[in-house]
Length: 573
Image 1 (cartoon, rainbow, N blue to C red):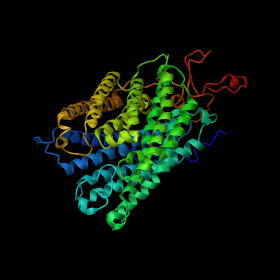
Image 2: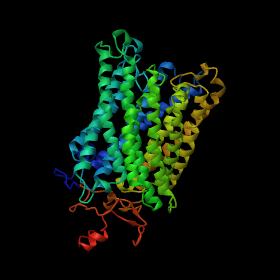
Image 3: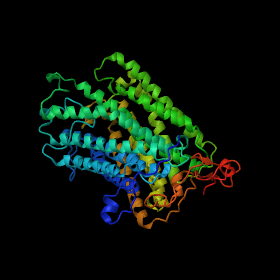
Image 4: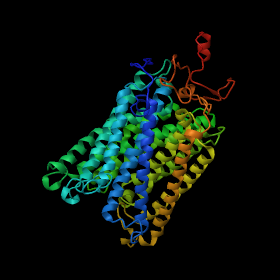
């Protein structure tokens, strides 16, 4: 049954700078806040990656004006780069910004179900980001225990000194998790209760399905890690022994708690990017999405399987080796629904009238990079291969081709596609082309060679790879990857230039610049407060009616009346 509830609160136009831009409860402004915060934290995380790779390329050289990054500082770089990019860049942009902006517009609602709770979730995230940044400047330095925070290194103060940076690091995570718990509740409530008349679950755009799946996975998986974080703080501050062996604790317990959350978290980041690509393909191939229901069921199956694969991260941790086989099987099985989704994406493009606009370029880049990462993941899912490759740079390469390709290529596909709707301006095409092609080239030059040096035996989280005789002959790869990273970072500066210039000088965007069919493109660009004016939309069609037989154009929007509606005299504009 379709829920037709309208927003259960009064909407009033925000007035004044602070109410409009800082303390707004409008979902569109909150989406922009998430996006801006994610881009700011991307600059911080990107700088840490640059410093980390510089150390790996020239570990025995003190560079004038830069300084030598020793093992302790290198641990800080590894810890905070991973934390920032996954939790404070990927989630704010892909889940926070895209979800907040798109869900009400694509289901035909005026706002989120709980606007004030929505604003609170953003400001909690901003607080968590601030706490994390402050942790760099407290006595003892920033957190050095690795982005996974494994005990006993993270649990015993004598290993890290009186490290308040690590305490603040844990606190920042707790605040960030609370923020996205509130956001996830808001997402699910809005989609379930506030859909426009006619917007059945079978007519929801795929990006909304992916956002709902991501929010559900986060809500179901984060509880054990929150409990683990509290126990870890207690070990550090009040002398308990949950994870410290000499106090009767078990360090492996943290790994189980972390990865029970950590593997679903991969899909919390991946699914919104996948949804963005799935919205882009039908628009720029002028074809309906192939296998709409298959993709939905594949997403549900992958989400369910993500809760029973976590121990493939722990094949060499010392856990009972008899567990390796069942977790290898579930890990290989989870590739099946994603393979089905990839085949559906390819079929959606097959024999389409493809237009290589900027969103489509990023969408195709996402498909290529994600598929590459998925193929390397098959090796890591097999226990015998993983025993050799575990904790090498092969894993780093795989991780960046799956998760980081989703953030970069899937994220940019969404930004370039919905930027006109969000800001009312078109992004510059020439700068956009330069941004895409330079990013594609330098991304591959940076990360693909890491497969090679990982197979050669280079271990993660080691500040000086030259101490390993087997790695020294391949040190040129570290130098090459570092120089390529400089090109990748420079490519993102092109985007920032384009992003901010287009705010003021970009060509004004029409309501539907791409001739797309989904509901958000029937609102003005940018949408007004309340989205729809006095009349709320009603939905008559499936979201992907392109090149429909008998239609007078190659797209038919969701609000266009069906033949049955016209016969009933219920046609709507």
